[in-house]
Image 1: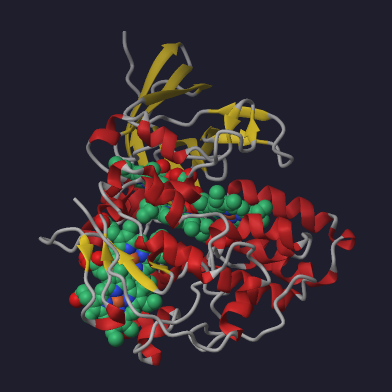
Image 2: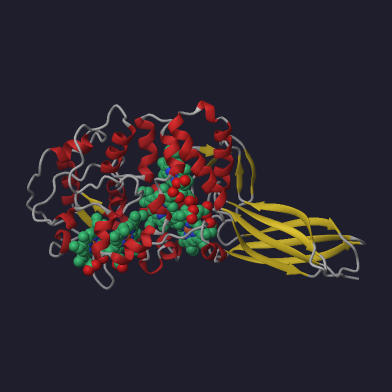
Length: 423
Ligand code: HEC
Ligand code: HEC
Ligand code: HEC
Ligand code: HEC
Ligand code: HEC
């Protein structure tokens, strides 16, 4: 399949548009974007160059605005896209992508210089126009002097991973092959048409931000972010893409471990309890990853707690112990204490021996509690404890980030079993 960018006539708007983002991105000459865009797109899905170009690091500024677009069609604001793409806009607003520039990122930007910060923004607010706005807000030395062009709303950086970060390059709208249609470019219609490419339905589109490169940071030899490679090595790779699971019916929700329903679909749990000696019992929970196309959970931040308790006939509970599913790493990211993540399709057995009266009359209860932001909870608490060493402007967002990281925990499910007393 081929998708060719139609050549089009361009008019150049005020030079200040280019000057705005040039301050932060070296390679933002407009010709460079358009050069890339007029190249042949043959066999996009098998062509890694599409992804290299689409996620060039850093991304080039959009460049000169083509003639003939209304202010609404030209705008990079999600609200503007939402005037015509209402569903995607409503869904995106509820997603974590819309929160990618939150207090958890912002407090850390106060500890960095612009070059360090831009390494984070590659994934959290990747557009050159977003980086330019943040540079101005942070008063970094290399901030652009020009003010933002009319198609860049003042709050574009705060809005995180905006529509345009995935869909707009050189002012062209790029999206998946429309249902029942072929790849290619249209030039008629809103915003001067759009480019359709099968690359948008390919997991590699997500890998740019959900996979560290091979030379990225590692702990105990394992890449700190390895979701795409986990998926590729899994039985799901042949059947379901990231989009199939996280954007079913092309919905823009991207639910993951923060969402109880999505997380419930990831695992199958069986629970047994058996007497092993007079007064001695063994509880065993077997957790199988049946629905996550990568490790459950994929990286070090979330923890899933298996909380075992004995519940007496009168309802009183005696906690017996807790086991954890997850990759536990210290806050310096130097040592791992445990890695009990469950690869896609695999299962893991968690056992707990305990004493209890016979005859039973009690039940073993397993509560599964998810703490999606556990690693951040520890990291932020430690930074707060040394708060006097931080720039004052970092403190308020750090406190907000810490409170938020504690607030996301939820109970996933609760099972109970009567003990089996073999004779
Ligand atoms: C004035 C209305 C309007 C605005 C504003 C608008 N679009 Fe569109 N867009 C359309 C129409 C009409 C189509 C043609 C396809 C359709 O009917 O969905 C389209 C097509 C697309 C496609 C191709 C869909 C596919 O099937 O591949 C993408 C992607 C897209 N727009 C993204 C955006 C983004 C991102 C923004 C904001 C930066 C935006 N649009 C702003 C009207 C608009
Ligand atoms: C993280 C990247 C990302 C962001 C952010 C994003 N999209 Fe998409 N969008 C996609 C992908 C990927 C697809 C295709 C999914 C597939 O093929 O299964 C898509 C599909 C679409 C389509 C075609 C829908 C259809 O049913 O054919 C439109 C229109 C669109 N997006 C508009 C938007 C708008 C508007 C926003 C912001 C409110 C937005 N997108 C934000 C990645 C993104
Ligand atoms: C430009 C970078 C970028 C791209 C491309 C991207 N993501 Fe994300 N994604 C992020 C960031 C950053 C977050 C975290 C946002 C936050 O919580 O502040 C995130 C969060 C998520 C989450 C929420 C996880 C949770 O903790 O619940 C899911 C699911 C997800 N992305 C899936 C996808 C899929 C599927 C694609 C490809 C269609 C994709 N992402 C493309 C950067 C990206
Ligand atoms: C390769 C892409 C990438 C880079 C680079 C990156 N992040 Fe993230 N970040 C992500 C993704 C993806 C998530 C969400 C993961 C999830 O929910 O599973 C995330 C989540 C976060 C979160 C938790 C969610 C939130 O918004 O509070 C914080 C905080 C964060 N990143 C800060 C940073 C900082 C600081 C840097 C730079 C030192 C950075 N990130 C660099 C991809 C990236
Ligand atoms: C077979 C369905 C499926 C596929 C394929 C899949 N995921 Fe997931 N994903 C899930 C489920 C279910 C969860 C919630 C449980 C969990 O966190 O593992 C999840 C969770 C996540 C999270 C939350 C963070 C975490 O620690 O688990 C991110 C980020 C994510 N997926 C990204 C991706 C990306 C990127 C791809 C493609 C490389 C992908 N997923 C492929 C089903 C899938």
